[in-house]
Image (cartoon, rainbow, N blue to C red; front, side, top):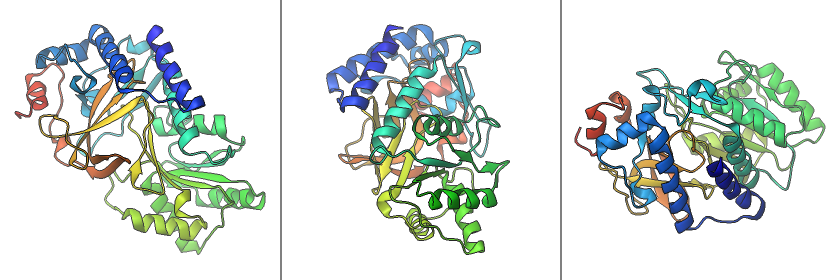
Length: 355
């Protein structure tokens, strides 16, 4: 498909040469993607028509579907039975998850690997990956599991492992394998959700374990505490990681992504997340008007790699857009309280701030 080739070209140009995507080029591609999705994504088209917003003049005017909409409809430009990838959202505390169908793995893989390579990898290091995320062999619809399996396959040393099974941490296997990597001088990348990192640190504390990870190692937090009763301050968590693993703050990576997106943002040694050039984020107010830099708003993403679903996604995350990047502030607790129906008038009312 011509659109896929064009998007892949943008990703490849940045990955290999650091090429940026200017405002006009981003705007043009985003509007053409929207027109394509308006034609072939029937639930999304009904939604846009209900809003009376089918002819945006800029990428900022493209109607964004709430992330919760993926729980209510198959938001695809193709027959979902033919999906190459299907990722399931974790849902919220008051409902089941949704499904993100992707027609091809090419765009997702290209965006994932390009971002990880440029933002996370250190001096071409081939890490040994220690993944405290769902094992894709057990949870094939986990985007986190798929992500880390692909990263390890492409950038690893061939000895990656998964250390969470049925929500239980395999601490003994983790300890033995990390010790082996240290003895071999092999830099490691520990990838885990915030909750899994806390569970790991608790287990290490009980056993009085500390490690001195080899130079250029990384500890990467891939998500927060959504749906969990225990929350730990990020500064406190970072200090504990540095203390237990013998790493510096600049070795800590935070990844921000969503099942509903195809691209990720990363922060290293700073609270500001950097995004690849084909992903742009706005902080918006109640009527989805773009707020100025530095203002707190709900985050709305336009991801050009989302060719076969929806290019614009309204999240339940609060944050600030700055010149340095995106600063996350947590979740809007009111956002998931109402259901989402793409054909319903209440969704159109919510879009314009009237609910």
